[in-house]
Image: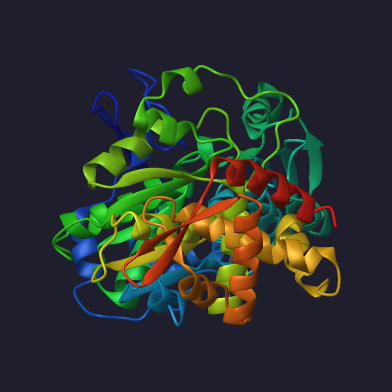
Length: 475
């Protein structure tokens, strides 16, 4: 099998039978090229994809005998039932990748990479990741009886580590962050292993771009897509897929790529905004974030992700940690989708962008939901506090959600009835009682506009909000 590569640094194009991630001329990052005519042919007639492998024509060729599958792909792109109405967005959709076999979008990459490893007669596979790709690779490797080694950072969601163990993967912990695990995976002692670390295998990008194809087949052309960013690989993959659809004449224009990170660690957003003092400040020891799935110090695909955002007239945004958890609750209680914190970032971003009028009412927008909340304890802890309604936990949980909503609406403010609609499951009288108590404690302030009263968070409220969010997870 020979791959055609394109370097996005020096525009060098070359062919190689080896899986390569860097250019032989300048050492820039390379991606695999797709023949435009194949894209045109595949989409010349409409079809409804039921499986990842329905897109085999656009993927690197692998013989049938080596195909490995657990039923990945063909995930739903669901139209919003409630949040779209609450935020006044007519065409809001959720691409629900939690429906994959191991509950994340990484099953697409695992299917292609393990199949490729099988075609090369490799019986050992290695992967460095911060969770989802490692869990997926372990599952697909176990299906073929391959020896799987996962190199992971110390900070990793326990559910993802548990999956690796269940799939009989050998686990090596190296460093506090995934950057250090990635450095370990490329060492010469692993040269006999098939390399499934996403940063070192561009087949990962090829597999993940099928998400774009599915979205087009399911809902047609869209105006924008909101994607969580760690290394920037997923956003780059989705951009590449839509770019190929446009070059093939299937769609007229690219949707705007909207990348989201946690404010606790947002190097790509910082680079977009050119915040030099933050860029040059290292992540300190003991640093914590709920979005461990996208916690990366130096994103591998940062430059290419930024190019994709700019090329599509998109944007990059960072979200406070507390909003991440309340967004996970909103998604579960309003749409029936239980997402991990990194996925819930997209919902929080949508809320903020709508408040700032950066997303219009008539736009067709897709939120990427990349992985299940069952893998992460923080969402479970936050949600479980709702059962403590007889004690302090339930009271604080409600106040946390109200403060978070007011914080999101910091520019224009928000009125009580709107808060009630967003939260659901709480009476309007209870909402106003909480608002009264928050106002008495000078955590929020009111402003009258016509006949309506709008609430905004104070500086004191912002400080209390972070402390409240930490406290609720300890109850």
